[in-house]
Image (tube, rainbow, N blue to C red; front, side, top):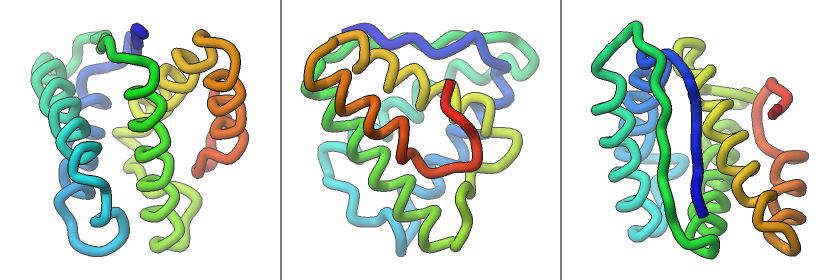
Length: 138
């Protein structure tokens, strides 16, 4: 399955990479991410940080993975997001500077799953309905 996110300003991608790195390595909410998911997230965060080096440029992030891997990682991402937001008592804790990339990422991941049809599309539609945050996912 292919995933594409963007174009988005590199500075937003960089802001999200910094935020995600901090949250992934913090104690407390979200600290119980399974090690395989955490390792995958860390790899993606590194990719985003590298792409974000051209601060004012528009960038596109692409990735390919097996559909079952994407489904597992998206669910892990959803749980992590919900846990962090719930603990903060806020609908969304993603910084404003990171929000454009964050919402494009969520939309791109769910869109890729929906493109697989069947149970993966149903799963993505369900997550789209309940994804934490104060933004309607496109």
